[in-house]
Structure formats: structure tokens, C-alpha cells
Image 1: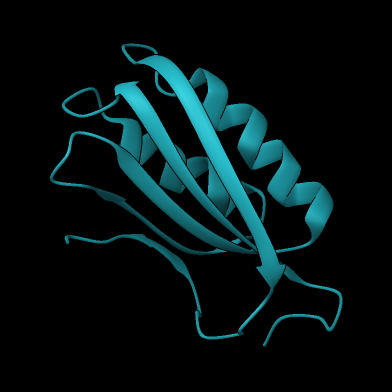
Image 2 (image 1 turned 90 degrees about the horizontal axis):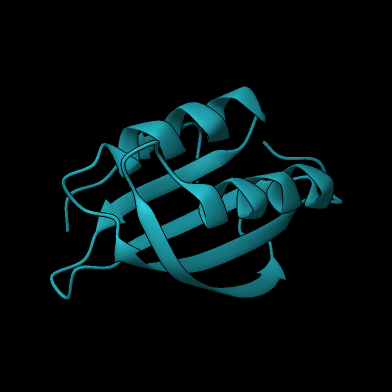
Amino acid sequence: MLPHSSVRLEATVTGLVQGVYFREYTRRAAVGLRLVGWVANRPDGAVQVVAEGAESDLRQLVDFLHRGSPAADVEHVTTEWAAAAGEFNDFRVRYL
């Protein structure tokens, strides 16, 4: 269960972000920040991230998303913020 002060981040990352280990690097970053949620490739070539945790940790994840994995070329990151739903127990790669 997440602390009451937890928030939810929903982000979409565009650019060269598929086939460059972006999801695995994102998973590692999120786990290191003690976040829960998921990352997935979208059919349109973007990567979608849903994460919950402390706002300061989520902002660090957003900073990471702007860089991505070493082989990635991130063009744009959109973010939406909401109250945490508390529906996740860990952070994993999801297959849409």
C-alpha cells in the first residue's frame, strides 16, 4: 500500500524509444526510486508509463524519461498527474 501522499503519473514518450531497451531501463529506474506501476510499448511506436509513488520520486522518473536508455532518442514526453489509485504492488514491463 502506498502512503497517503502518493500521486500517479501517466506519461507518454515519443521518439526512438522502441527496440532500444527503453522499457527495461525505465523499469530499473522506477524500482530504484521505489515506484510501482508499469511501462509498455504502444502500437503507435510510443512508450506509455503509469507510475505511483512520492511526487519527488516521480519527478525524478520524468527526468529519466527525457533521457531514456543510452540508445534512445527521446523527442517528447507528455505527463498527466492524478491521485494514486493504489492498484500496483511492483513495477513491471507490461505488454499491451
